Image 1 (cartoon, rainbow, N blue to C red):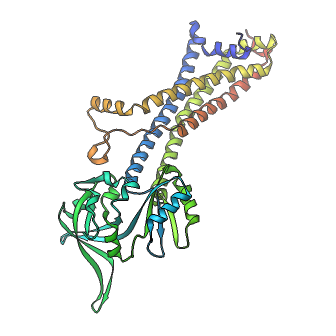
Image 2 (image 1 turned 180 degrees about the vertical axis):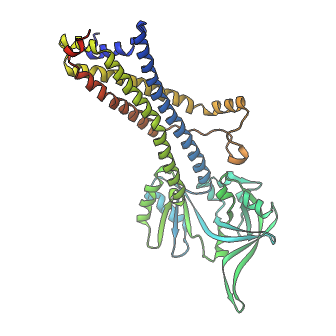
Image 3 (image 1 turned 180 degrees about the horizontal axis):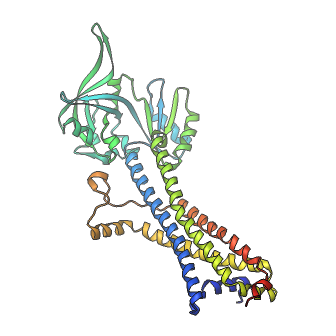
Length: 419
């Protein structure tokens, strides 16, 4: 099959170094460095963003082991017949899988010597496993130990360590809601028995979380019953949209919030950091694009006589411009393809590559006792890789505009005057 004239010449210029001439070899070296620069930038972008996605996924999964996808809260009073309310929500939206009641509030935990603040959550041990992974995070006990009327409590691992308590020990729960007496306001206090310890791997929860039965929490906080419902849905990324639809159908005094709203500041900070890192690393691709401009300018300067001969043989200025644009597009495509391939290869095998580097250098990048992660997380996403590849290729095409325009303006007579 005969190739188009412009493509044939562009391919010949791209692999000019194979003919063994010194000048052509140097041009081929410069062209190879341009390919390597673009590939290095694309590879670095894919690897770094994949690692950031991996860390975000790890933290998100640890959060969702404690949090639910959506919370429906009644500000006006208790949620009567919560199971019927869940059934109605599931009937209205098939994406809702399960629901569980809860009561939440703040309190102080005291052992006589130490006092710590805690976020108390009353749960139903039977329904809770359907909406969260708390059952899997519980250590040295189980959710079944939270029986109504027992006033047992499950503490976060770091909270229990700070209080210096273990299984079977007593702690005093001090609720800010209390009673007025002749001596003044007296907060309500209740002695609780530590029934288990929960370890989610997320310090914010492990240092503040305290779980008890929903009926016991309703008694202590005098809510008259559950104050809200925790929901689990099929796709956690659809939680914001689904929460809006549920909120519209709720009566006055009710509201719904999804898991991203509960940690909005953290997720916003991660997204800003990810964008800034992408912009910084994209400068590597920009360096490769500038290298491509230099390569094409040098090629145009060297090939002036060839351009002049082509023009005298009838090639139009548009054809000359297309030759160098195709040459730059080939370099950009090869660089982007190599970068995507290498980036994916590294990102998908970080769990093997990082331990090998740690073993060779005798260092540990992620101490398990600090990060609670045994391997470097990586999560390559098409939503990151496709824009990186497309923008890098478009940047390579943009780099061909000036050199190809300059080549098209060469006058045959001027180029051949000193030949």
